[in-house]
Length: 188
Image (cartoon, rainbow, N blue to C red; front, side):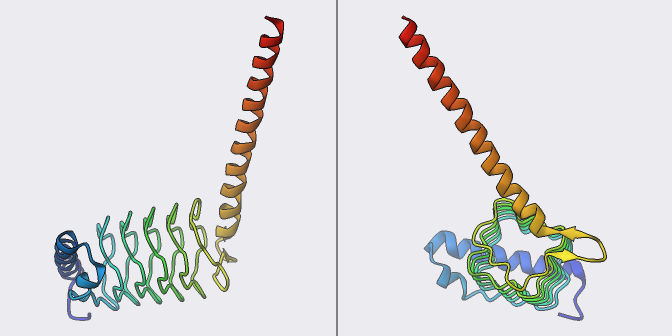
């Protein structure tokens, strides 16, 4: 991708995404969208607005996606090996079976993202938000950066505990209300 400016890379990618979206809307078939190949290995896509983009099986290895907006993007089976996704918003993104080996996801927002079957070996998830993320196999991922003190696993566990404690509080409240109703019925 060398020889292109950052804006040129972003504009070309957005054009391809529009073509894929038009094909998908017409056919409702992801295999048809693959006829429009997305190969942006090493591209400079810093800060790109890619919300809801169909990047299914896209080749983005080594791409610079620093602070890119990938909210609800479909990155299923995409190759993001070695990509820099520092500070990127991947909220509700579909990263199922994506290749994220060695990717930099420091301070990335992966809230409620689907990471089912994603390869995260060597991926740096320090200070990443994994709350509500599903299917994450964090084997071999870097979850703690000794230099910055960022700990993604602690945040991931904390959100799971918070959800459990909320459920427990709701359960206690509903039990208390049922007891109160029973007592009122007995007193009548």
